[in-house]
Image (cartoon, rainbow over all chains, first blue to last red; front, side, top):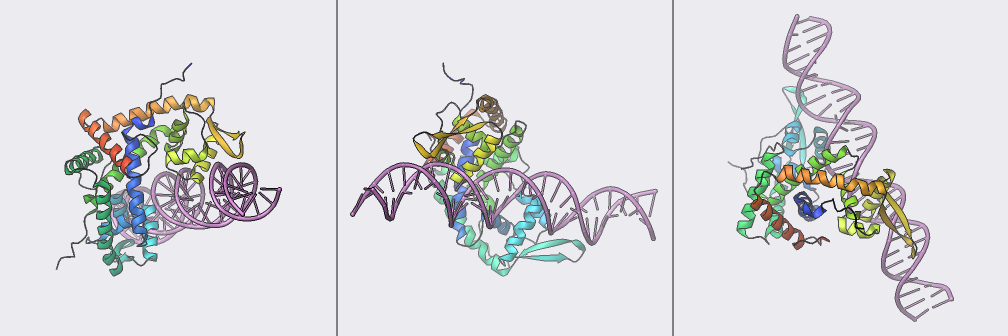
Length: 153
Length: 153
DNA sequence: TGGTTTTAGTTTCCTTGTCAACCAATAGGA
DNA sequence: TCCTATTGGTTGACAAGGAAACTAAAACCA
């Protein structure tokens, strides 16, 4: 007597493959930037602050999809690495503003190059048309659900 | 004088969108199965063991893309929930084998239904053709890089 | 103006994973 | 047959986030 077959397979779910590929990409990227002494989350924060006006932790939490607590800790780490600086807000004693240090500013382009490289290495296997289609689909999905702070189209 | 523009934007990277959408899907799924008392990782392990021969932790670590240590802890949790059982290997005193308990077996189909539902809710916005294309692309990427133990085509 | 409510950030605790050190037991080789 | 190397699994330290409690400073308001 066969087992009840009523369970769809893991690999039937798009979500499963999405998670798998996403993990692969992130892990590969993490490995590559590790030499520069930063993690993926740190890169995202640095990038968000690069060439942008100094921002408050809570604003960054919003755009990065993290909680305030997470940003506090992330900022602590980046400050410890001298890539970031906390600056008091003259108008509001509660508030503060995060700014890259010169070292931070200098680091971003290098990391961006690595990110480009990683993306190429990973998605290079696809044709240009496939890449375009994938991007379009992902942006659509991202926009549809979660409230992304990034332009999805 | 404008800032050096030499850094590509975060949203230029497919990897970025992949991570974003993947997180959305996983979080939504996690929320839905929370009521059943399991996490996403636990679901993956349960599913991997369902209707399959009992397997060793290291083998599962391989197929799930986790370390042995992670599987040990995951198994501990599932055992605490009476969904899983550790069984000594008669031929090798070091080895063991993991098997679902009856409760575990019973739970999987319910979770699978939720997973189906979640996938539909998420990817329902796409046309059938888009879904097919996405799946094909993801499987290709997964197969290309990481040594996936799952059939990628 | 004095009291209450919001808001900005931090801290604490919990979960989950990695990595590396470790313990046993088995396999292999002189 | 020992002695060494490998393998299976566990453990402990640490990293990274989320949730909720907490602190201090504004803002609102009667």
